[in-house]
Length: 342
Image (cartoon, rainbow, N blue to C red; front, side, top):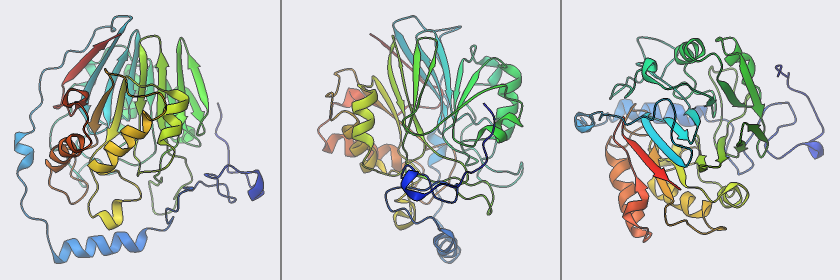
């Protein structure tokens, strides 16, 4: 699939997340200019530095139980590498989500948010990778060094991207690429991959705001259905995602990077929002007794102001307040593997 330049179209012909100037936008009222808010947040941080937080000392990687080379046909095995990077083994299909192995979530090797916990698996220890899902182009989700390394180690993998990310990813050595718009689907073997809406934005420089799309993904195979939310704030389409692509055996939903709330609320779920999103995903089909929510996007890089361990504790509290079974919430340790069988 070749890179497509932005195409101008009359507003009446566009989906609501496409802007008339060829870029993208959120249909739910997200202000597309956030520069003033960013400056206010940074200024507040300078005036009122965050207190010392040693919570990361308790975050130690554990031994993984990766299925090598593949999981059993009726098995779903998921390993948390860190942040939003998951190794998802859906039967015979091996999938990576938003892979980042670099020491920093940054365009620079010596500046920017640094890992609190090492990547739980080396790239060399991965099984054969069939699919890589990239939700958007922020540096903690699209890491150039990691993309190059994976392109070399797994040249046959197919990368599934939202619109207009192909050019950047292909320049890093990736060979097999499919771009999708929201609600579009792609079949790979017996798997169906759907691109799902998310409330977020894209940018890698001050000058490319929203030129590429952002998304989540839903994947269905004979081994089960898996949902990956990507980066997102709360939005009204979670119920529709669940209706069209569920019921999900496992839903990977971000629970961190949410403070200050006045600034992060439109683009990042907090723990209460994450539980609300999970419940909406299962509103139509009903929640399977085995359906699990896995909390991701926390405890790996310090990107925002909340204490490092707070997302885990607040998510557990929100889950209990919603009356959901404790066994259906999984907030993994780095490297931890969870296996489920149909």
